[in-house]
Amino acid sequence: MKYNIKKLGILLLVVSFGVILCYAILDFFDSALNGVLLDWFDKNFMYDYDTGIKSSANQRIYTRSIHWGAVKSFLLIFSILLLEAWIISVFFAAHLSAKKASKKTVEEAGKKIHAYMAKEVDAEEIFPDTYKELAVQMMAIKTNRMQNEQRLREEAQRKNDLITYLAHDLKTPLTSVIGYLSLLDEIPEMPEKQRARYTKITLEKAQRLEKLINEFFEITRYNLQQISIEKEEVDLSYMLFQMADEFYPIFHAHGNTAELDVGEELMVMADSMELARVFNNILKNAVAYSYPNTAIKINAKEEGNHVQVSFSNEGKTIPKQKLDSVFEKFFRLDEARATNTGGAGLGLAIAKEIVSLHNGTISASSENGTTVFLVTLPLGTLPNQ
Image 1 (cartoon, rainbow, N blue to C red):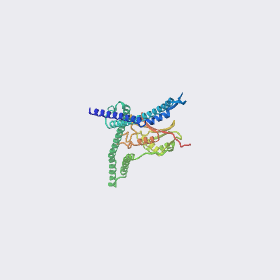
Image 2: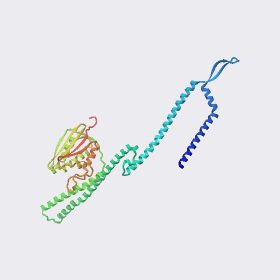
Image 3: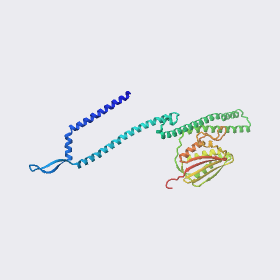
Image 4: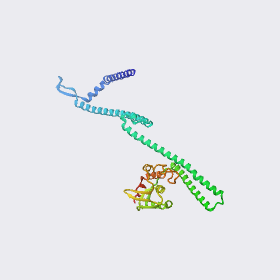
């Protein structure tokens, strides 16, 4: 009630001030500028009119009359200028009002966004109907953020599990190496056949230990590295034949063979070192999860403006739920650490990152005991060739 009385008093003061101001302006024009205005009007809008009558002194009688044409022209121009001034005033007033309203809306939207993102609440509780479109967008953003956070938590958990398993698994081969070396040192007269057997076992355990240590380095190095590429023209056909040849010892050790069906002169613009890294990781994975004495097939061909390279191997069919995760960091198909398959679970994640940097795609499919990894890269040659 007191607040309303105060507002009414302010309103009366403003109206009173307006009336006094108008009266003062009117008095000013009526007194101080009255002569000036009359002179200006007489000069611009009055003229002498010959009445055609002569006075007693035989002089022509003239009278002052208003030039209505001049008055109309002046009023037209004045009205146009007044209208333009009014339009400009309305525009600036509307602009300032819209700017103020926009600022207020942005501030309110910012507060609502902050409240929504900071709390576990439904969008309807924060955003009214006027913010419906914003609410839909914020729901999508929040959902995406939560999914990313969940993915990072799962990735961190997989990494921690790997490190825990590695730390535990390091003890077994290390204990064996120390044990067999101690026996060889304590019994110098050990039979040669037995000594050779112990030496072989020690070497195998040392190699297993080396592999586990390399996994540790791989995990650490991935966190520190930033992959960058420098493109050049690469003969993809030659690269694939060369890699198949370099992998011969690995294929032979597992009983695998390589079958190549590669088109000639498949040229791509790529970083040859990083692209070789992609194929190396895929081939290692194919060998690790293939059945012994089976063929690993490598195919490459042009498809429109792209080159498709596929690697297929015969092995256990990968379940659909695991197939969707094979390109995630620290993911291993075989969760049993006792096996020699897989590594730190980074090879395919790195491959996907490199292929993406080349504006390509990588995907996997697995059914009926055949697993296929498909890499698609854009064709490219050097300019003016």
